[in-house]
Image 1 (cartoon, rainbow, N blue to C red):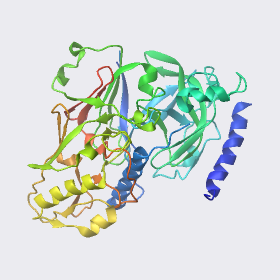
Image 2 (image 1 turned 45 degrees about the vertical axis):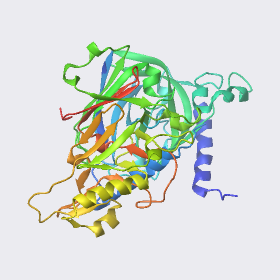
Image 3 (image 1 turned 180 degrees about the vertical axis):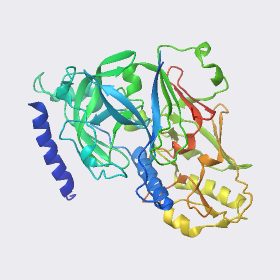
Image 4 (image 1 turned 60 degrees about the vertical axis):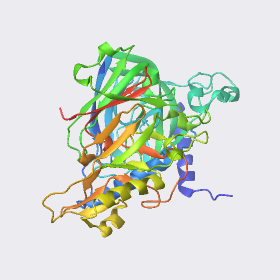
Length: 458
């Protein structure tokens, strides 16, 4: 029998008290989520991002089953994600959210008693994290247990457990790669400058662990923002990570209503598309929330890396396949896939000096000391998808300078380097670092994923 975690018991006790207290063509700026690194040591920063990417991969691979165009600025943040601001309530209250295509619930820090444990990120004071205050909103309502939206989170059987119609929907606990959040579900108004979405299901989180901001779930579940808004597609273009709080943003664009080929933006006529894939696993698993792609080949330089078929296609056991995830920083590859890719780079770059000490300190490999080189030839990295769509990445999307004296590392992570392994779930998780300076489109109406290389800087 497992021993109860004292911290978890303490948080659950606090959560119970908080529940008692609680009961008396649109465009958003998208920015990299985080503040200035607490340390000037770039190796420490890269190691943190590598570990976070691996933790995120573990969550996505083995998730817990948790019981017209609008433009929004999208900002890069220093701990690896991209954030947007959304306004809920009447009158509106604005909160910051991590934009996440690997989950579906939208939630914000909530009530004056919001508590975030282990949230001491650089330049973030856990005691001053802005929180939504339901009692200040005239449109805020606790979601009832009999409300059909309650079943979006807890399944259809939840309605049979409601003794009366006045009972609230159960509280939720959601685990992410590096943190957890818990709270109650609200029905609230989501406000944009030119429209309001009434009765939007949103999580009012009262307790969190390592979650300094809310999360806007853009996954495929019914509770996600795209599904609740009835979007036909959404797109973004991620500005380059600088892992600081520079106020540079790009646009997250939300499309409502049906679109046709004639409606495409003129400068996006050369987008490459690949169809989304269905996960053949059980219909009630969290894997159904992911955007699966059919990765056919990984090409390093002129070498087609040999990857066993079982890693390229999702099976009925939910293992294998490729997903795209804006909430992961570095791309994850199952160890056999990663080793083949890393070996291809190591072989083609063998004339450069390996930096083994940096590999051990960062969890990334291969790393090379290029401080004495006048010119460096990096093999191109290409992901080829079903239908022939090729994502040829700029070198800055897969190699990064990790020391000031000229050591570069491949920014792809795997199990057994920065942490223990999880031999289940997607074999490849395409992170946001590899999506920098690409126009990326999730065409929900046509069930396809589009991309085009371009500068995302405004």
